[in-house]
Length: 359
Image (cartoon, rainbow, N blue to C red; front, side, top):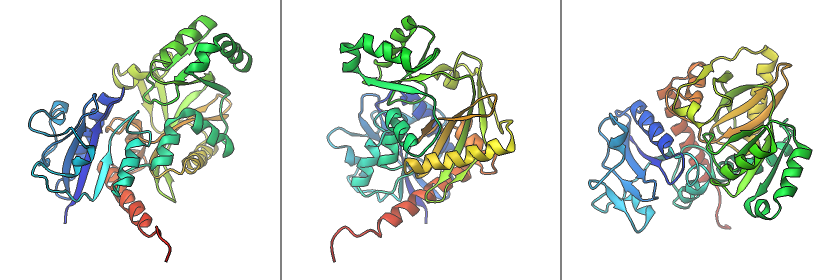
């Protein structure tokens, strides 16, 4: 019997377009002989729309952005469970393909938990902790993972204590510094600063995207990424290296101009690879991960390793680093999707064994 898969994508997020690309790629890789595929699109304004069951992959991204033919869910987003005739669809699993705010940060995961629906990927805690770079770094610190020096603050502190914050950054960190919104992915809002004037500009840019800001000390290092797959017993892929042609790996170099080389596997000593894989597992467990995580590291010329971050919903097109890492670890894109769906159902079934009332 075919499994019924609800694909949830789009979203009210700065990463809306990335989500659409991911959705089209996943739909193209799903085996329609094994799955019934139901698209659920969230517009940039936050309106939920459910399309008809897909009979074949979408040929364009535009086909996934439903218009008048869709069921528009204006009053209650939980109506996505219903078809246009008002009949409930019994989904076997929901596949959230949402990037960034309102999708990758634990919010939609919380909704799916309340609805008691199986879903692919990380749970509420891992998603929210993985989204907030400050909380993530604090968890990594507790887990003993090596990190570059950093500081953080919120908007109101910047407004009232700007000179104090600038002095703290210059006292605790060396130039260059990287300024990041705490709760955003895909390198949106990230800037490099080499002096105080650039630091002020970078902070003002980052504050357009989040109220909490992280400032990290730059480090001369290679950018190495590994893919983690599993629940309680995660597996880790071979490492890959990001080589941006620009000053750093920003949004445009990731998604627009193709100015980044992905080298898989990365050329590293065997002992460094082993250390990276062990640290990736520790990072996954530190946030209580499930399903998938991409673990990002800095590796210096001396092969010193620093944890950068984890991404709980990494780019998932066939040319994204996460699927490519598994492809080079002998797990194809369609098989990877199948395994994620299986892991989601396994985690859901385990949760159903819990007791929610006293005997």
